[in-house]
Every structure is written in structure tokens, then in C-alpha cells.
Length: 196
Image (cartoon, rainbow, N blue to C red; front, side):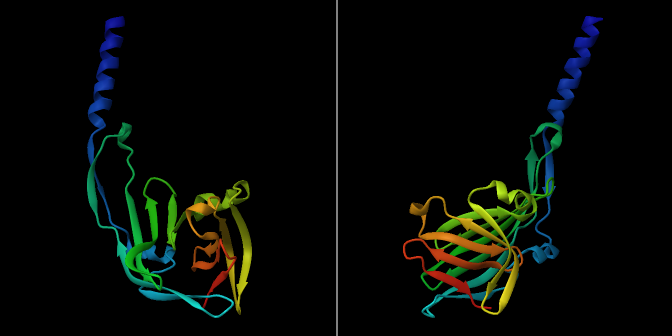
């Protein structure tokens, strides 16, 4: 009886091992998913401080991830396809193109990260999975509304830079629908607001 169990166990392990390697085909980003992206087209974002000086972000191109294939080596062939949208930009301080925002999502979970690069300050947030637990994260604050000028924005996240030596930005306010709404310079306390 024991040899029969051993043979069955070995056969099961071999089938799992051989089943672990399988090609997985991943689609590119569905253009319909751009409805989740705050910057779906080329645009110019204008931020203004109290002295009415302006900081401009020129979004030149939106890139959608292309379909791709890879060999899945995870147990039970549970491998994630990641697709993304990227907003490429320059700004009034930097003429070298960079990724201003990358939205990355998975087909096997609800993960959807918005990864920003604002004047060298890198931060990311997953509205689907992190917003319900925002009060448990010391660097994040939720605002049900934020009024800038005559415009009120809802469901705003305040992201505090916990390593101020890494970038000269202390706080950023943003939401899912409109992207970055306000940022505050670390060294001077200067506040820059989005001009609608």
C-alpha cells in the first residue's frame, strides 16, 4: 500500500511541476480603462502659488501598455498580467521627458496603483485597496472635500513626505479623478494649487 501512495504522490508532484510552466498571454491596456486615468489626453497642467507664479507640466503623450507573453512558472499557473497607462511629460523646470504618472493594474487582483513623479518626489497610492485603510497609515490623510479657488474636489488624499531630505516637497493633495491638486514645498512652505 505504501509504494502505491508513494507513486501517486510522485505523479501528483510531477504533474504540478510540469503544469507550472505555461505561456501566459497578456492583453495591453484596454482603452476603456483610461476612464480610471486622470490624464487621458495630452494636456498642460498649470499650478500657481500665492505670488501668482506658475509651474507648468506639459503632458505630451499617453502610452498604453502593449500585449505581451511570458512563461508562467508559478504554482497552479497563477501569474499576473500587468498593464498600464503612462503620462509622459516635461515641465517648466525640466525639459527632459519623464513619466509623470503611471497607472498599473493586475488581472488577478483589484490592485491599481497610481505612481507619481512630481518634481522628483515619487509616491504611489492604490485607491481601491488603500483608501478604506487610510486612517491606519500615518503618512496619509483623507479629506472628503478640498476647495481650491471656486472648485471643490471630493475624496482627496493628502500624502506627507516622511523623508523630506529625499525631495523638496512636504505634502501633495490629489484624487483619483483629477490627479494632483496641490503641493507644498518643504523648504519654504510655498503652496502651489492647480488652476482649473
